[in-house]
Length: 537
Image 1 (cartoon, rainbow, N blue to C red):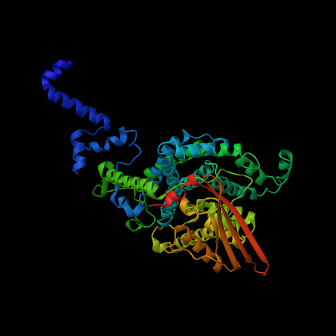
Image 2: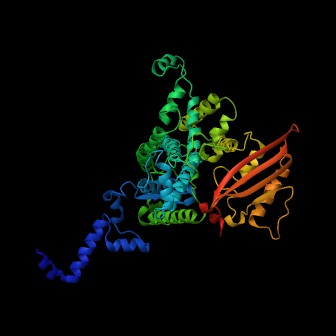
């Protein structure tokens, strides 16, 4: 039948409506407009159910189950942590691709490209903030996802391999975030990665492998050196190290995450999400045997839940980046100057805490390796068939014990724990850190009036200016420090050049042995630095 005859037979209105419905059905992979409207209203599906067709016809939906057991769709069962980690990874890919446009991975250009991105590219600062915050959140969410899986016993048979792929994804997430740490090429990034990679130098050479090192690099204790060279490209981080971390961050690790994500998700779909332990018999797994009266179809019930959840997450993420979170760019990387209190990224604080316990090889390499091995083999070491909490007191106790140990070790990894620095240097670092802002830089430029301000003669005005508030805190900090006996501090503000002020900190005191001591440190502050501007509301 010709097009003209078809229009004449059904009328123009009927013809257009029929063609529109056919087009809509193709776009939705099998759902006609009338049933789509019924889904939005919450109507029950007809028989046969056209809402199942997209799960076999659609590229995007074929990996999603067509329905779930209603018990696993409760928010408090999984907290949507798996979905959230996947969504954050997608955000990382999108924002990372946009950031790549403005970035070249060379020491000569990396830092200047970051400055240009933050200052000249429209919404460049927001894009970097979203990328950084989503990366930090992804680490937290993946860790919580693994911990929830452990607490609910969802790693037990038949999901052992699913747990193994989850461990790989956790490790890849940590190193994906770590590899991106170096790319801004500022002091924070450079020295955090320097410390992180230096842990690899503790790798011992296996017995009998010494001659191989003698042959290859001329030293018998060679494994730690070789691993360090592999990561850095040279004894110290430079152009080769930056390029290697860039390739790890934008190619190898994302590819690894994508491959193992699909393997992991395939196993989740294949075996189903484990039901609450109280709804199953001990040793049985009935996640895939869902009675018809307990099914929740993905379209549209669960799909709408996920859309609303991810919309709320997106709003919170954007609001945090717009009003509260700021991924600071520190001074350009300087291999010749180590900042005070340099640390690895926060998610490796626990490793730094272990290094402070004792021997570098034992506590920095052997213990973490054993820990990772035990975590990986959990499904094969736990022979208890029950997932119920009352039957898993030992496993749950060990889980909370390990979590508590990681928290304590992370605290021990903080720069202020068991790190000896001169007390006067600590005070100055607190008020005007080498990297970061600090209270003095937050003071408006106009209030930094040239002059000499001494703690032993300070009186202040009424009311106190913002600088006087900071100086009063400086005075009280010196007086209560037991390592600064009889301490007298001063802050000297003087012009160095037009628009540039030199700020000199000086602390005179008596040390623990009663000997006089003095600490002096100079800083330079430019009028256009506008540190104070970020703190005015």
